[in-house]
Length: 132
Image (cartoon, rainbow, N blue to C red; front, side, top):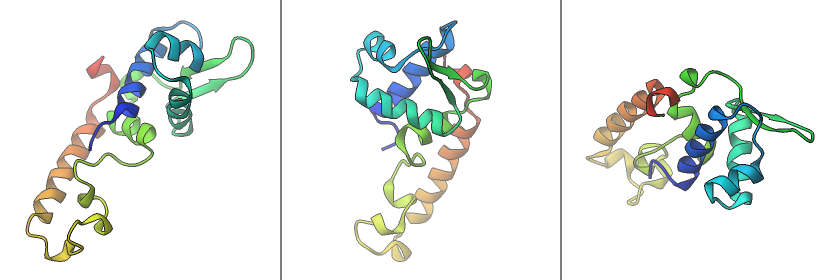
């Protein structure tokens, strides 16, 4: 599964944050986007851990973008939000997830891997600016 709610919420949050002239807190974002605060807080922390967001402390604290949104790729956002690289098919990323336990004998494995490489390349070149 390529995109889950975590990726969707990350994109929605980044859009709000980029339009704001001041840091936005998780509670404010959760309220404005109607997203559970605890779930959103984990997503925002992942984005901060990956260097996409910076967390400002204090009474006027919150999250801000660390770079211009032209430089933020969908690949980095999805990876930060999901906690792993995006995958169309689980078996293209991890041999241990092959449903038959025979990744080396799988006739479609080469296709799936090539498909995943093309998706990764696309996401690594698609920026936040291009989709917002």
